[in-house]
Image (tube, rainbow, N blue to C red; front, side, top):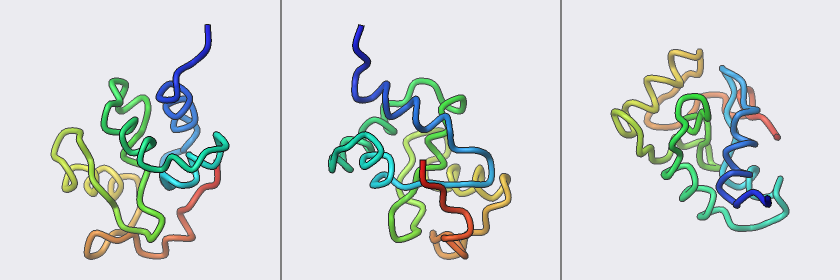
Length: 102
């Protein structure tokens, strides 16, 4: 059985370790597509959080981005900070230090 786009994205997302983030764009490109918004849609529909850590997927400019999970954007920021990622004004400080290419 062929995996759906969302399943492929969720599988990639499980490879992001604590203390690291990746972007919607990097995930899309890892699947050979430019469907960045579709990645965001997959994150919003993720039924497996936190096992599939969608809170670790952020915007390409280092902004935290939205979060449909518990607590919304503030909840996402709390989870990232708990993992050691510094955030100021909804933006990851030293973004490249935490960025992972999957």
